[in-house]
Length: 182
Image 1 (cartoon, rainbow, N blue to C red):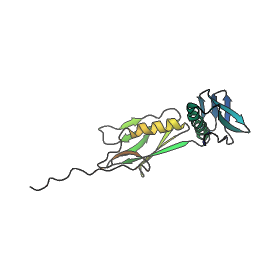
Image 2: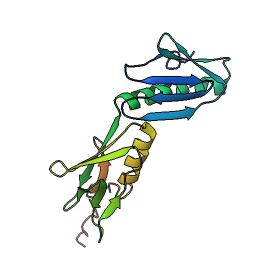
Image 3: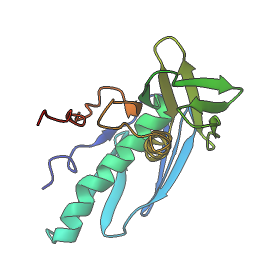
Image 4: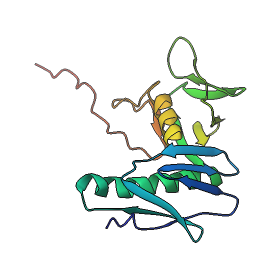
């Protein structure tokens, strides 16, 4: 049995979980999420917890077991406390600013790159620490949005300039060696 899959998902106060067959609907103070899962995995509510079980030890069911439980746990955590990804802007003259809800990135192009937040996502930009926070209740969408912001100017290996995740280590390369004397 999957070590992750067999753990029940506890539901905090203020969060409602509705299980109908393989469809799960989670509603909380931050928002609401719906998701349809594989019918091979059984999802049930027992004693105020969500329990995920599988019928057999077939490899596909074993793979789906832990994944289904983790996705449900992320849904519950997202609508109760939310998720956050922090990005850092590194480079001379590089900065990020908020223009209303839109994020404006000044990262070495001839124009600022404007990023509109998708529904359920909010941005925060701190000029002093040069950090961008991507906030939301859907973990997949938060990660995808952070990845798209990073792709505007990924960190380059020679000077380390660009947008990177907080704590990300960029492998640095040596620059071009000076011409040797003949």
